[in-house]
Image (cartoon, rainbow, N blue to C red; front, top):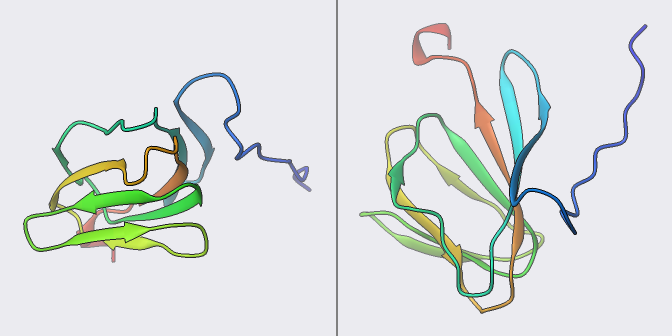
Length: 106
């Protein structure tokens, strides 16, 4: 029987981006942005769900802009161009939950 593991989601120190859990179908990354910071604009390589843990995150796509905080999440479809940034100069921490299965496997 596999062991139960505690996963640190706080990201108080260490790398700003790290994979904290992965299965063949799902990868969970934790991300910390500097105040006013943002990830480079990129296309989602998978279906993703962005889940803020602290602070507020601004997600911009060509179709919409969403601002989310703790207790909320933003879903982004595979292939969408996006920018993810700090919405309130408060160094947000958030999870990025990515589907690893290809569309053909769904």
